[in-house]
Image (cartoon, rainbow, N blue to C red; front, side):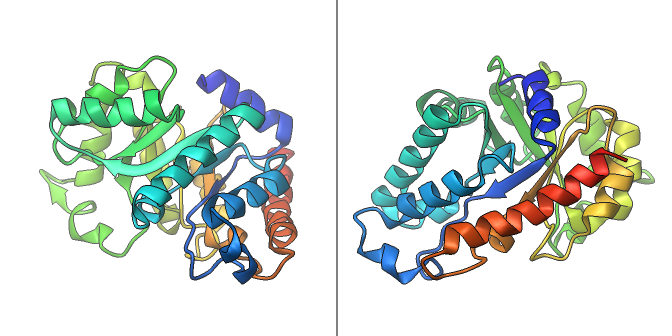
Length: 271
C-alpha cells in the first residue's frame, strides 16, 4: 500500500485509528477457548466488527510467537484474512526487528513477502545497514522506533550527545538512508510534548503512536502537536478496544470503543 492510498483511507473513513491485535489467551472470552484456533477466531470477530472504523491493524508478533507454531499459524491466518477480505486496511507487523544486513533481509522477506504485511516495526540501534534492507521493498513501509512510550525511554532516547537528544540524532540520520521515503516512526503518545520538536525534523512522515487509551496518552495533545498537512498519524489502541469485554458480545463492545475514538478523530479532522 502506498502512502497516498493510506491517506485516502483516512479521509474516507474519517479515522486514523490503528487497532493492535495483541491476543492473550488468558484475557479472551472463555467460550473461544473451545475453538480449534481461538486466537484467529478472536481476531476475526474483532476485525469484522471494527474494520470500517480503523485504517490499520497491528498484530504484535510476540503475542503469537509465545504460542509456538500454532501461534504463528494464527498470525498467518489473521493477515491472510485481512488482506483477502479488507485489502484497503494498512497492516503493521509489530515485530521490532533489528540485526545485521543479511539477517534484516531475511526478516524483511518474512514479513513483506511471505506474510504480505504492508509494514514492519524495526529498532535502529545497529544503524543503517540493519534498516536499509527493509527500506528496499517497493510500496512497503519500515516503521522505526524513535521515541517510545515506556518509562525506560528516558534511559537512552532522551539523553543528550553534543547537546542534542539521541532520538533527534536517530531521526536526522535516518533521513539520509537509501529509500528513506519509505520510513515511518514510532512516537509514544505519552510523550506528547515532544511532538513539536519531532515535526521540525520529519514534518511529513507518518508517525505510529501507541499509548492512547490504557497507557494514558491524550489524543487531543498528540494531534495538536503531531498532525501534519496529510494527517501523518496512526493512533494505536490495543487493550482499550479488544478487551472492552470478555463475554460473548466482546466484538460489539470492541466496536463501541473503536467508535468512540473514531468519532473523536472525525471531530478533529473536521476542525
